[in-house]
Length: 387
Image (tube, rainbow, N blue to C red; front, side):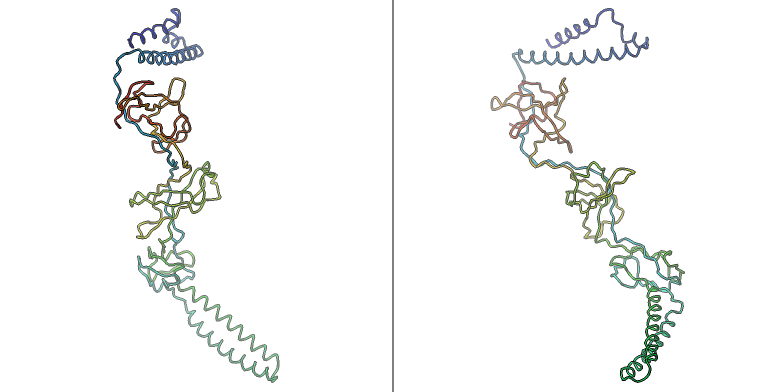
C-alpha cells in the first residue's frame, strides 16, 4: 500500500508540471540562467511538498494497519546534570627561570665549577674569568686604604683635642674616602669575574669551555633551568575574553610524556594580538618528578561554559523534519513490555563530545529513545531493551 501511494504522489507531482514544460536537459542546453534558477526553485518546492505528503501518508498507513511489529529500541531516563563546554587549543610549556648566563667581564674563562645536570643554589659559583691583574690592584689599593684610614684616625683624634689644623683633618678624611671608593670600584670589577647562579636550578648545558676567551654580554656560558615553576601558555580567540577568567577550570594534556593535569587559569593576558586576534592565558602545572620540560607541546581544554542543571542527550539521535525543526522521540509506556514513540520538537544549545544541551522540549524524567531513534515514527509501537 505504501508503494502505491508513493507512486500516486509522484505521478500527481509530475502531472502538475505540465506537458509543455521544457525538460531540465533542454533548459541547460538553452543556457538561460534565469529559467534554470526558476526551475530549480520549483523543483525544491515540489520536493518539500513531497516530503510533507509522504509523512502524512506514512502516519495514516501506520494508524490504519492492524498489525504492527514493535520496534526494539534502547532508552534513557533524563536527569538534570552538569554540562560543561571546553574550547580546545594548543599551548607550550614554559618557565620564567630558563636562561642562558652571560659573563659580565671579558677575559679568559679559567675555571668552570659545575657540570651538566648538577643542581645549584642561588648565588653559587658557576665559573671564573681571569681578572687581568685586578686582584693585585685591589690588594695594593686596600693597602692604600689602610694607610689613609690610619692617617685619618690620627688627624681626627688630634682635631678632637683641638690640635693641628682643620685643613689637615679634612685632607686626611678626603684621602681616606677617596681610597675607599677606589677600592670598592676595583672590588666590584673583580666580583664581575665570578659568574654566579641567579636562581636555584639545574645546569642544563655548559656552553663555553675552560680556557676560552669570553666577551662581556656576548658569549653564552651556561644554560640554567629551574623546573619547579612550570606553566602552560596558550592563545585563545578574543571571543572567549568574557567567559574565561582567573580560576577558570582547565584540562592540560602532554601527549609526548602521556600526562594529564587538571588546573585553573592563573593569569589572563591584557593584550589582544592584532595579527591573530588572540589573548594569552597561563596555567600552572606540577612537576614533581621533573618530566615536564620547557617547550613541550600541550593540548589545552578551557571551560568556557557551564550549566549546573542541564538536560543533555546524544547529538546523533536528533533529526530534522520538513519544517526545519529539530526533533527527538520519547518513550511513552503502555504496558510492562511495550510503549509508543512520541515525537517532540526540541530547542538545542551548544554541544560537546557528542552530547548536546536541550533548552526546551524535554524535561527531567522523560525517557528518550537512544538506539533506534532514526528508525521510529511518531506513534509507532516500540519495546525497549532496558526492560
